[in-house]
Length: 114
Length: 111
Image (tube, each protein chain N blue to C red):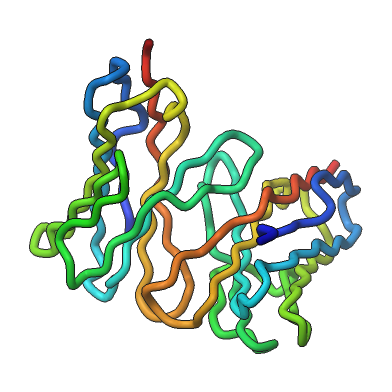
């Protein structure tokens, strides 16, 4: 069974630009969550999608948005990039929505904003 | 506010001995707890989990203990191996798949 696939693995963008990251969950998983990892803040929850609906949202500005398609693939978009957006962005997929379900992570996308 | 805390930034253990990683939480609504292992520039790898209705869960060399009254959980690795050297994250969830992570503990297993 293929794991969680994130593309691209690495990205360099300029301040003010926008970026779209992609995540393909494990086959059969309908929940996709996104996390940001930075040295200062650790792993922070961005949002979760289940059956194409955003079910949960973290404390990030509106520049961070996402969506989920009918095949459960998800995209995350960051507009008007700032230097502080440089981070490892991780996608996690889960089978169920609701507590008691393990989340499996992809390799991440390393975003560098210059 | 840090709802999940891993107070030890690092831990060094001799190969073959037990590694004990600790985690404390403050939110009593958390009812599912997970441990992940992570290498730099990679995604976290799921290790083991425990529901709040249990106080222990074992999987091979890994055992997680949960003390709900103390809001404390620990991960035991026995015996520790050099390949276990990594950053270990404790995570907690309530309803939904939102995970709240601790800051992580760097484990070094010396051979």
